[in-house]
Length: 79
Image (cartoon, rainbow, N blue to C red):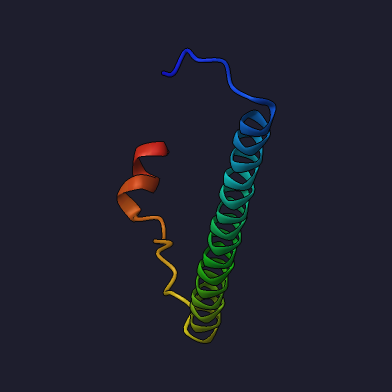
């Protein structure tokens, strides 16, 4: 670090440079946020389409019921 006192013009230039850098960083951050938002929306849309297709397929071809009737052995044990 330079310990020499800065002139008013130098201090103003340093503040201006810092402000410009912050503005550039802010623009980059907003662009990253927007890109992440777009990616999330695309993934959500893809997953929704997959879910709806699966639900439609399940409605078209319902799974076989796995309910078994009571066997005589079970009935005999109770009685």
